[in-house]
Amino acid sequence: MATLLARHAEILVTMDDERREIKDGAIFARDGMIEQVGPTSELPDTADVILDLSGQVVLPGFVNTHHHLDQTLTRNLPQAQNINLFPWLIAHYEIWAERTPEATRLSTLIGLAELAASGCTTVFDHSYVFQNGCKVDDQIAAAAEIGTRFVACRGSMTLGKSLGGLPPDSCVENEDDILIDSERVINQYHDWSRGSMLNVSLGPCSPFSVTPGLMERSAELARKHQGVGLHTHLCETFDEEKFTLEMYKMRPVAYMESVGWLGNDVWYGHGIHVNDVEIAQFAATGTGVAHCPSSNMRLASGIAPVKKYRDAGVKVGIGVDGSASNDCNHMLGEVRLAMLLARLRMGLLPPEGPQSVLSTSDPLRAAEWMTAREALEIGTRGGAEVLGRDDIGHLATGMCADFFSIDLNTVDYAGGLVDPVAATVFCAPQKAKYTVINGKVVVENGRVVTVDMEPIVRDHNLFSLAHCE
Image 1 (tube, rainbow, N blue to C red):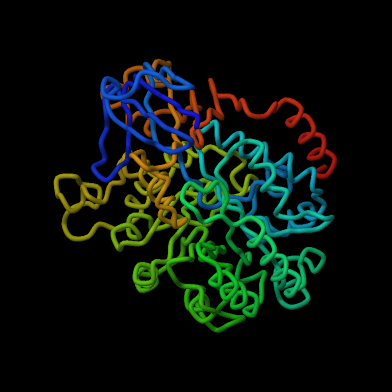
Image 2 (image 1 turned 30 degrees about the vertical axis):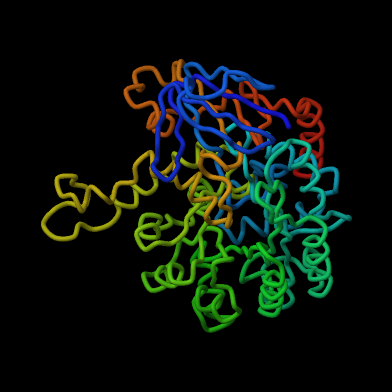
């Protein structure tokens, strides 16, 4: 079995149960699993692969809980640059339907490479437009090429425009066909064993693009199989809330409850427009949320109440979201924005009592500030919890060997190293020096080394330019 020793880290951030930060830290892994974490002097000094992490901070690999990798093909689409979600989707649907299996491969490789270079080691991807022979298998194969730990979501749309939904009828599928293919994907790919590189989830796209029947039948199918999660977009915009009130006479969360979509196996993308009762429902049922800061700002959707979620005990992770509603795939950048948006939300709330909500002289007010370490925790342990994984998200014996390092000796961090851990969030988002997934080096010096990306970028751009002009 292959061994890996990563040693002499300036500081090793474990995010373990004690939240240890180890100076001159090291990790020893065998066959993709961590056997030892501690000071370099206490670990073995030989291995098949040895990484010298001198001058670098090491963090657990980020866990991305909401993404649409195929959207790298439509980044920066001119007609969708300055509109909110519903018109933005209408501008994209039919272009996404032109995607081919090869274009899917290219777009997935592009997104995963960019994510890996930003410290992301586990990626959840939600694809829901399947035309021209495209299948979720295309994304799964691409993830294996890069070496990313992957959660493939077999998404779906059935509620076309003629039935009162948002997507064109040409972009939706037959409900029975979706469920047959969903079961095929689960049986063929889903692996719930410890250290698994591939899980499967089911993802009817949104309340405005699928029928209640598909929501119910998808939940029944997923719950027949251990570890198959359920994911959809929810409470992202006021337009969505208006849709469910008019169509179903219920707010979005109440509608989800009516179709069996609250529970420990469910998490929602966005979760912005919720009230205190709904937050309590999420906490009581174990329902999770993927917070997508960039996308929420890009589409003017709003600011998710992340601190309220965490204070109530709701599971929260970070999601990059679609590469066309974010236009980049940088997990460390998302973690930074999650911290900053939480602080902006504080400033938008009215003061309670005689003291300003921004005052830190009151311990209760000080606790409302999201810290850099809290943001890092949401991006690592939080994401693992949302995905139902107890083998990723922190660095300890028996955990997956998924981590990344950042060089601290750069212009970007100059003057900020009195607290190098916080510097990774407060200072400009950096690329990883190394990213290790399942005990294997995937990124070295900021570049993916498992796939030759130059021809991928070229062919990806050719397809994108041909279909987006």
